[in-house]
Structure formats: C-alpha cells, structure tokens
Length: 229
Image 1 (cartoon, rainbow, N blue to C red):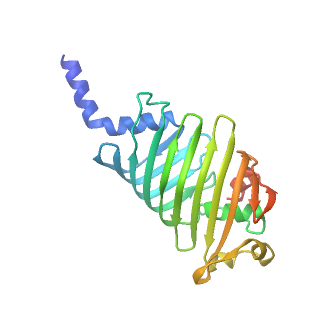
Image 2 (tube, one colour):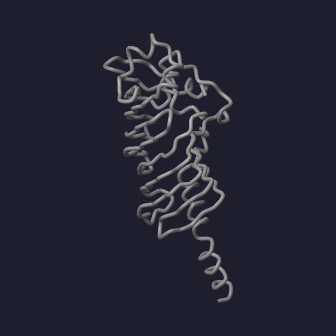
Image 3 (spheres, rainbow, N blue to C red):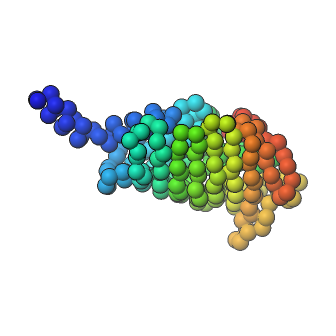
C-alpha cells in the first residue's frame, strides 16, 4: 500500500514529463525544454523548447510555445494525436548548426530551402498537426518573420514514404536582394509593401519529390536542401 501511494504521488508530480516523454518516443521525436507549465489537461506552456526528428535531426526551436494536445486514445503510443501550437521566437533546426551555413540562393533547390535555413528567425509560428501511425497531416502552418513569411499545408505519408505539401513563401526586400534576377524574375509573384511570394507543390517520394512551380515540373532532392543549410 505504501509503495502504491508513493507511486501515485510521483505520478501526480511528474505526469507532465512522463506524458511528454511517452509522446516523444512514440512519435520518433527528441523534445527538450527549460521550463514547463501545465495550464489545463493537455495544454502546456514551454520555455526554451526544442523539438526535432530522431532520424533526420530536423525540427524547431522556440523561446516560448503554447502546446495543446487533442484527445489521446487508449493506444497511447500508436493512436492519432492532434497538436495545436503557437510558438514565438522560432528557428528551424537543420543538420547544420543555426547560422553556420549559407544557403545557395542561385538554384531552385536553394530557393525552396531559403525559409528553412537555420539563420532566419520567426516572430511566431502557429498551426495544427495530426499524427497518425501512417501519416502526418499539417493544417495551415503559418510562420511570420521580419524577413520571411511561410504557409504550409498537406500530408506526409510514412507507410509509403511519400508527401503532398503546398508551400508558399513570402520574401522581404532584404532577402530578395540575395536572389539572382534570372531565377527570381520568372518564379516570384508581386505582393504588397515590396514583398514577393513563391509557391510550390511537393508530391511523390519523400526524398525526391516532384516540384510544381507555376505549372512547370522540376525534380527536387531534399538532401540538397540539407546540404545547402
């Protein structure tokens, strides 16, 4: 009885950390943070949050993050999980350390890679993802930064190693100055306040998807994006 009581007390005080650990391991993620506060059941506020994939090392780092988990099924390690997030002070994590690499902006591959270069920071990134055993659904991910804005929606299918994603990036004048005119001219659309946008649709194999840009088909190698960073 004393052992059961002690175990219950430990579970009460450390449930948040245990649940996050189980969630991370069940979804192939590395999750670390400096501080955590539980606002309600399934709702957390993190400070110094870092989330990355165990296999690829890609992910996000945020100064603060409000995370809300949807209902978890009895299959805690394999059931569908909905995650709503609102992060501030965000950078993308790549295999290269943030700020140590310089993306090559003179190619289609480099242009697609620009928003994910670890040297850029975003004031906020928000959206919803739904994690299933065979796929990840991304719903209206919005990233707002002083230099770059980003919209992403679509599906990533683990079981058949394929992807269907729509990505729109918005570049400010300082970023546009780094792009060669012969590349940016035909591909970028004019927006307000001197910004320009670039939209792509990724489909097919996860490592080498087809890229549809303004009606044309290109071949993109995701590994080249990582090397560019």
